Length: 424
Image (tube, rainbow, N blue to C red; front, side):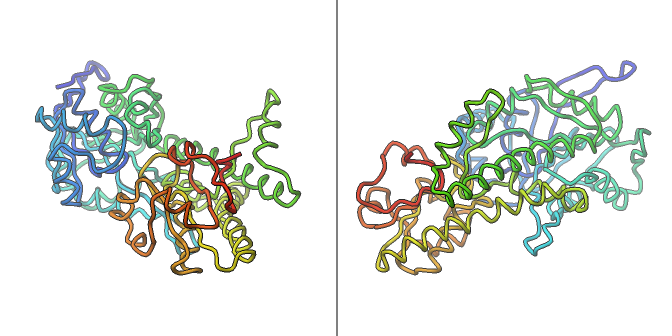
């Protein structure tokens, strides 16, 4: 049990934590709470995923995660389940996508479902923390949902404490370095009330070595959105510059390298678009909440969402010059050396090219097995190993800079569409 001192001598005690959602965010968090000595129940509706975790295996590729899971499962401190059990603290880490209907409005159905499942087991003194990236005001909305389900509980109003404590603390990790960053990065913690903030800080202090930065729930929600919007806007600048360079016959990567020699300039690298669950999604949460004030943010999103079109156009031009050509698309994940394909522009491009030229487009990705398990659309693709694809195909499209592609060198005697500057 971890004990911390609260306000006016109030002890903050945590013996058992339930983590709801065992994906890229929730599973590492559950593992780290267990490593800190807490009893942890990881909850997910996916029975196969729960079974995998209970066998000591990681359902996702993340350095050092599987060994940590196995260690905590064997210790008995971590167990995965499909049902929520009573606990001292509950951490919600479920997906928060947006609706693909042109409105880009946030889909809070996963969070709401988690809260409805959680509500029956809540007890006075419990802490509920939301880690899922959310629009500003989501914590307040969840309190209202619980209020309708549990009228016996006194819930917080303003800074007035209630029977249950609520806080928002977004993850700040990047796939491929999660197990390091989840411990060492500073953590933003926004409680709905002052004591809720201190309780959440005490919970994360069990394993976080970075500084716990205390604020309120709405500020914490906005911080997470602002961080990813900053990245998105800067990527949009790089992508837009690359399009302009293409028009003028300039190598965008050479230009950016020279521009970045200025002591106060740091332009990012262009690519085929922006993917992943964070950067390609979160800015829309800001836009949906304040469409009249977020003109730059919306434009940046439109630039990045439109970048795959320019890559497809370049491939079409190459195909026009070689009408019988075969195309190899290198990389399908949203960034190099991971098995995360959410909102991936590379996958989007490859699927569209395959639809344009059935039987003449092949996909290459060292983590294709993970994709085939996660996305039914991938079964429409034809996969090849790298060496075979480069040998048999006439047009090579570089979409993701996986380590395997970088070390192979630029294909000789092939038409190359390099959207990431892989073989400069």
